[in-house]
Length: 84
Image 1 (tube, helix red, strand yellow):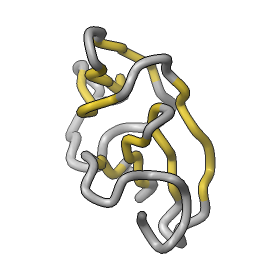
Image 2: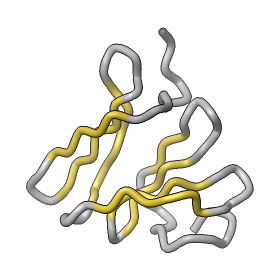
Image 3: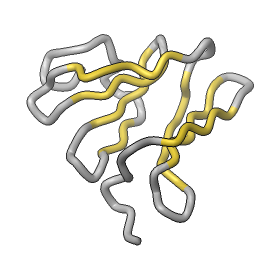
Image 4: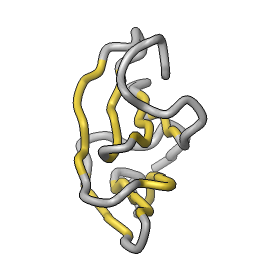
């Protein structure tokens, strides 16, 4: 867990957004966590997420690799290391 909050997995893949929010895989999808550890929201998917990353030319699409499915979600933020 990050900051002692949420139901995420300790060693699961995580990605930081440009606004310093953390997105971490969890048993029910992806959890969005504020820098202070507050759970801001969840992206629920029906399959277990094994990896996630930001992509597309603006770095604002979140790709989720699940058991047998690849999800692509547009977000209102960018990945932390993304340069436009």
